[in-house]
Length: 177
Image (tube, rainbow, N blue to C red; front, top):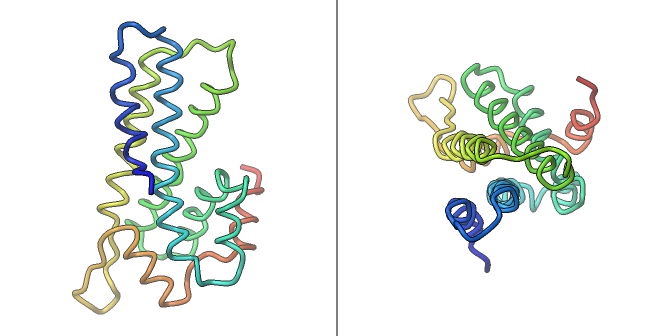
């Protein structure tokens, strides 16, 4: 199985190669950052969703996955009443959306100049997302038990039957802001 972190390693090293054209390596590095974190998040959610039969798993395996994944986190945040968890899920969704916009700009907007500053922006988004994956936490009501880590929090809400549904995610995906 491919080690997704290799994308991040490539993204970190690529901008330092002197023999490569700057803009091309910056654009490529940003793309690798995006796919590293997108694939990590998608695999976490797919693992949680694989035995649910409402269509989320299939959605995450489709071309709509890039839009569906942040919508999934936004939808979950809408279901949660705990401010810090709600805010962390929104931050996760926003950082992923920002990184995707940056990746799309690199891939499709050839008239826009991409500098090393944009690589730094991507690194910041990656750092925010990785910290959230690790540190996201939920304090169970009326309990001293704290659930830590995105996967563990998702498993908890799965057990409580409180994960986003397919229709909820689709509604968020196509809601105008």
